Amino acid sequence: MSPAGPLTNLAAQGVSIWLDNISRDRLSDDGLTELMTRRHVVGVTSNPTIFEKALNGSVAYDGQIQDLAIRGVAVEEAARLLTSYDIRWACDVLRGVHDRTGGLDGRVSIEVDPRVADDTAKTVAEARALWWLVARPNVMIKIPATQAGLAAITAATAEGISVNVTLIFSLDRYDQVMDAYLTGLERAHEAGVDLSAIRSVASFFVSRVDVEVDTRLAKIGTEKARSLRGQAGVANARLAYRRFEAVLGSERWRRLEAVGAHPQRPLWASTGVKNPEYPDVLYVTSLIAPNVVSTMPEPTLDAVADHGQISPDTVTGMYDQAEQVMAGLAEVGVEYDEVVQLLEREGVRKFTDAWTLLLRRLEESLAAAAARRTAGSRLRASCENDQ
Image (tube, rainbow, N blue to C red; front, side, top):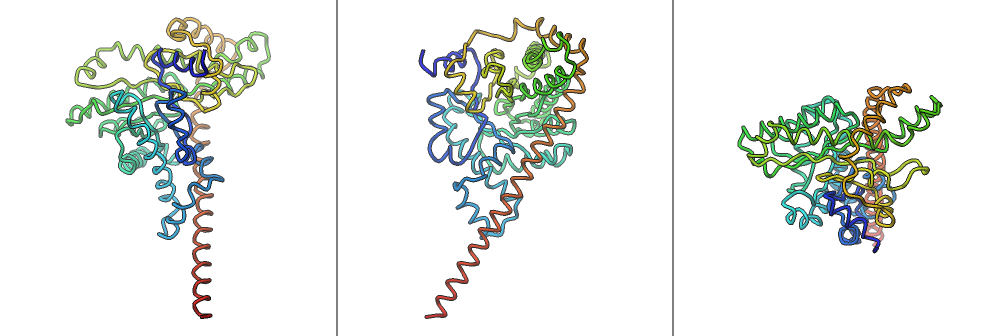
């Protein structure tokens, strides 16, 4: 089988393959286009951590940073302009996929400032600003699934903004996210907004659940606890898909679908395996089902292409097993609610830290660019005086 064979098979099962990475270097050398051709990539996600790494050490941003320094643009606005430039570029690269799939794929996500995750009004304002700034029909605005984020999801959706809901760990929170989306669609319809133009995904995180749960299982240390290692993330995601199916079977959804609405697809996020003892394709091959997105960092994408064993639907027939895993975790003393609440707080904090670091490094770059310009002006003036 060719290296791309497993990815071809994965896409044939109704899984959309999105890349969990973006950088101007990748866009400049047609790397994204190549992944679309070789790896069946039909979408891109980003987050503050990805952008911080992209800007750190790359010269691809120097020209724009120089222009921003000359204009005296404040650091926070400079960050928005730099990141939205990359998103707009990626949207243009993927526009053909968007058009060919009727808007299902070809999507590129950009996240609101994570520092406002607990402020509904600021989150909505950020979503509006990014939607306007990127100005592409295939962009998605990422809004964290915090308590404050739920109302923001509804408000943004009601205005016709396509939302990628991020940082979902809890099954109950996932129910709230789906309700927020449906409420937004209902309000949009009442306002005369074209529902067929609205798309959404709900990013359910996987590997981070195992990292936290496995740490707790190791501390418990019993044979039963050890036997449950590496199972919580997949079980949690499978049970989330069952709830997705329940919503699609509801009368509420059928009413919305009849007036042009599209379902909010589950997106498996955090699919890179953190524990080297586990198969490096675990969170992809264990979560194959129709109407889902699997967003992968490039090493995971390559691993699936190389040796992924793709089976038809590894989710819907596994609900009983998933329930048994969750019951077993409760039995040995792992508190599910405590785990998912911690992961949500940590998720927001990690993205906030990454965004703060990006701002600090960008501020240094802007200052250096301004200093170079000042030094150049002085040198020119000195040369003119010497003449």
